[in-house]
Image 1 (tube, rainbow, N blue to C red):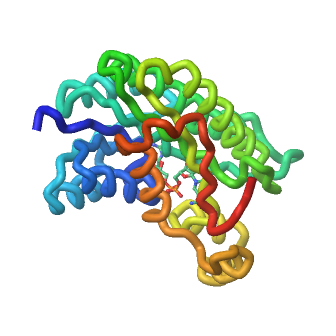
Image 2 (image 1 turned 120 degrees about the vertical axis):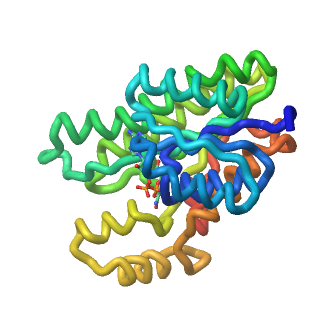
Length: 251
Ligand SMILES: NC(=O)c1ccc[n+]([C@@H]2O[C@H](COP(=O)([O-])OP(=O)(O)OC[C@H]3O[C@@H](n4cnc5c(N)ncnc54)[C@H](O)[C@@H]3O)[C@@H](O)[C@H]2O)c1
């Protein structure tokens, strides 16, 4: 088991992060399930353990440098050096530009962009030491522009430039860096969007599916499957890419 790779998945208490943590554990990795509140990670950790995998729940606010440093140190001490990182934690603070507050802007940029920066910086030393690593950042189709999401679109587009730059800097050390840009995925995040829009979530899904070429909305497992590929040993020549996983072409 000393050869077992160690992954960190942020925002893994639920949704896409939880599905990704479970999938990477099924792939044979030990997984650190990071979320803002450690107690919220227990369901994902238990699901992995019940399936015979190895997981550790860690509480950390991804936008806080000290908490990120402590989380990565704890993972290295209790699971082993992390060489796979999935920057997935995310929040929405949707508002039209003229109503968007400083807090709406700073919170979204802080969690998505600063969070990915801090976790990538704290884990890269382990990857460089082992001359092997995988970083996958969660972008979004919203990077292409979406009404009411100036903050989120800026963060998700920013993550694409961040991804390509890290791919250039870390490639010589055996580290690949890619982004996955999901379309409509059924999670608490899209359910909250339906509530805010005052529309029924089932109706919103039906409406979204009709616009998607494969005629269905996405599931967290669709994204987990893609991340599993990008994190695999065989994907070592795929780097600096943004892979849209949206049931049809987007970019
Ligand atoms: N659901 C979609 O349709 C969709 C589409 C495109 C991109 N994404 C992106 O995928 C990622 C996951 O989305 P989801 O739909 O599973 O969302 P979700 O809201 O269901 O889960 C997000 C998780 O991130 C955690 N989190 C939030 N802020 C945090 C912080 N500061 N520190 C640590 N953890 C924090 C939350 O507690 C939660 O467990 C996000 O980056 C999101 O922007 C989602």
